[in-house]
Image 1 (cartoon, rainbow, N blue to C red):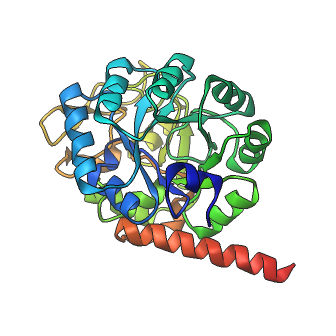
Image 2 (cartoon, rainbow, N blue to C red):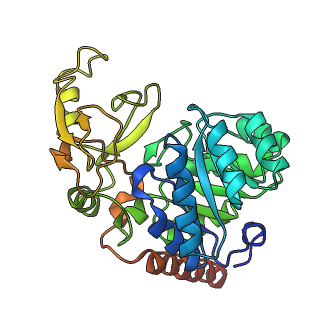
Length: 330
């Protein structure tokens, strides 16, 4: 399965791990890379010293290529400069189109991936110099930029650009990967499935909730978990926080049930507020179930924890079998 994407990233399996906030640390990213996939580590919003140290740790754990994820709605210039200085292979840019960031990264020799929610945005990103387009469908977990479903978005983006397209949103097994490839994608971007990897840095309660959830137990919200990151639509598991808000008639910010309530503490002791955009990490205390438990609609396909390398291999082999069976049936 040597797509144009594989050649560009120098990988064997066109499977990319999504940046998933605090859930994707160096161990997960390196494991995906060492298994022949491509890892993406989220470092936006972190102190520069931590950014540099984390990049160095990933580089120690794997000799393979990986990318750093940067959020364009937060200050990114210093973080991008740190990536360039560290000799990172690529960057993944999301939450807005910033041609200046693409140009800076390209000038420094980095491979640039840009996440989009429409074909029009994909064309703008390609014109600005993007090497890879990540077409994120509405089914995706975490923060969701667009409002078009993966099945409709991917072929529209593929038809709009010449660079490789990576399909994201609702893909959690090899059948989803095969479907994305049939739609013209060169690879897939997987998040929720890796939340159940041994290397994912998430709280046990969060991971158990992922394993138990059905496909209809996520919700997309315009601004529910907005504390620390406003104006950023997202998809999470349904929980007591979202249910009490729905029961109250989905009131606006400022009138939601139990606003400003401290429901837990981070591993370093900071308060976790109800409605906060926060990934429950190992060591987080408090009402974990009530926190923002990011998950995509493919969550029902996630039923056991496994090492990340085994997840990569399982998805890859299942996709190959699915594609071969299609050819046999024709």
